[in-house]
Length: 147
Image 1 (cartoon, one colour):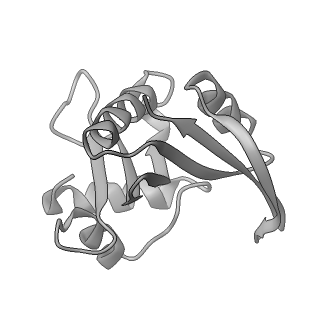
Image 2 (spheres, rainbow, N blue to C red):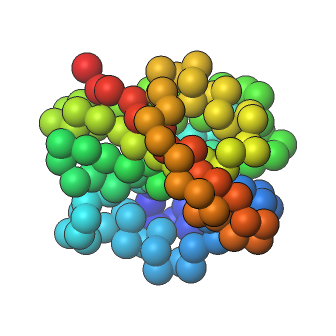
């Protein structure tokens, strides 16, 4: 992820209900290697346009753990494997960084995301009641061991 990608990343996030609607400064901080906590911020393009981001992921690192803060794919590019590519790349980078576990929270009603994470090797390790608002909903806590 580069600052030049910011406009497209904001467009993708704004178009998806489940994506965080962070202000631009949060995404810029995720790209800054001097920012604490350190983050890995990735983008992926489609086969027809590798230069334009169609998906992105951000994870924060507090070794030996990391948290997947977001993974989002533009609606027009979904079901093409971009989220899987981002997750595999992220896990590779986390392993290099010495991270042993990747954690995340996901809405309990988000069946597609839950299925994606389970297929990617995550397991449910807990639940946060009423973690989300608008609407109020539980968060499922998931963890992926990094080997």
